[in-house]
Image (cartoon, rainbow, N blue to C red; front, side):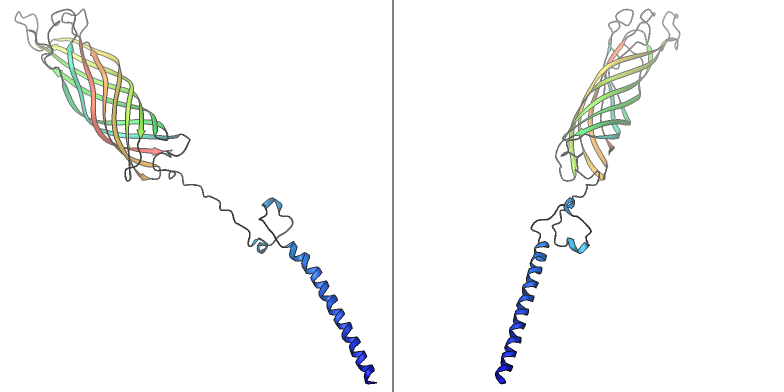
Length: 300
């Protein structure tokens, strides 16, 4: 009887063992594919994801950093020098300096004034004015077009030439310049950006003059103050120059500019009287400007 009970217990334990092994086998068989399904050896591209996904499903994937765009105006301290594209800009500068009319010669070929030297061959006047320019920058170079207007250089002399007749000449010279400037920008020196430049262009001079007898003649045929002529003369001459300076950034797209320059505006010719007048007169002189100033640049 006891032997039969042991046999029955042994049979039940055997059945339970087989059932356990069978259940464990099923669990392993179902768990292994599930584990393989969620194993990812490399990050998937966005185009490879299919179906619906929860945010937690993407944890552990490699994140690719996206570069932030640079703020305009801060790409470089000096007109985006490292860039391969052009940048355009506008500027204005206030000049302080001297206008000089020098080497004034008497070019009269006939009449009483011919051959006599000029009484005052040179004059200088303090000047301040505004330059306006628009240009393009590429790496270390800048090319721009510029305009400068010089007005009211007065050449008032009495007498004009060293002869026996005293003539009172009053001339007003205005100059309009169209210039092209080529700049070379050096690398930074602390917060400053030094540069040099050369200038080529054209200068147009307009002279308005009045000439009169300053005293009466000994014979009495000339009365003091008698107007001999009033004329306006225009001259077109080549202009050239050079200079240096430095910029300093004060805002993302704004620069303050300090500079010095020399500008030769060629020559000025004017005829206070006609060739067929009783006292024909023709004058010529060299015209230039030299000075310093301060300005503002805006980089687009």
